[in-house]
Image (cartoon, rainbow, N blue to C red; front, side):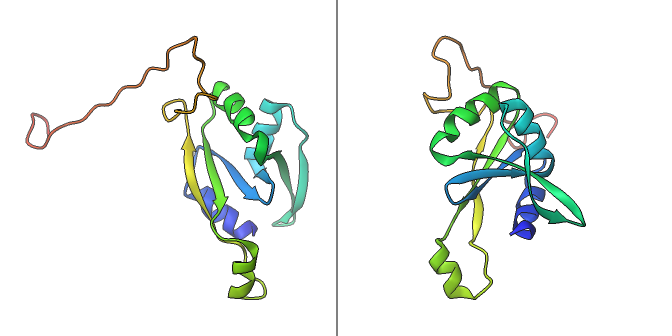
Length: 138
């Protein structure tokens, strides 16, 4: 499982990784330390990696929008990694198979569309710049 986490995390540098583990999103290593401090939640540990304890914290899936709002408000960006198959499917693939997971959403101030994550009393400005082929400087 940790090998899968590290692979997905490497593909999303600079983002905190909400890694789905059943009814929780868990964060590990530096992400856990950052989230624990930002959210005021307990930092614990889960197993070892290269002989060192793995820092871990987690948030319940049903309250994840609240935690995402707080993390985005504090200037962080989050990659949400969901289970893309159920445990029975993983078991059918083999005795020690890990449930497949993948990032399904990147949450940044510029990608927010949910009313629950936006403050209706303030503006959320976005800008897009495109350069057409054949234009000057291309």
